[in-house]
Amino acid sequence: MSIRRILASRKLVVTVPDRRKAEAVRGAVEGPVTNLVPASILRTHAECTLFLDREAASSLSPAPAPPQA
Image (tube, rainbow, N blue to C red; front, side, top):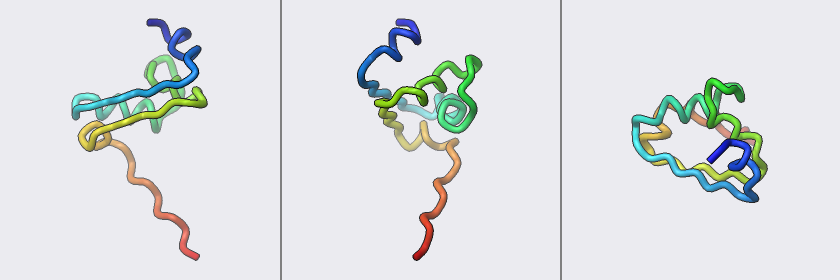
C-alpha cells in the first residue's frame, strides 16, 4: 500500500510492538517529517492514533511535566 493511499484513509490506527522499532518510532514522532523516515508523514494526518508498547516507546523523550498552578 502506498503512502498516498494510507493518507487518504479517514482514520489510521497504527500499532508498534517490540524494542526493534524504538529508534524508528523516535524518528517518526520526534524528528522532522522527511522521506528518510517514511512513518513521519503520519504526523500530518488529522486522525492518526499510535499505539506503542513500553519497549517500542523506550527511545522517546520523556514528556514535559505539566505546569503547576
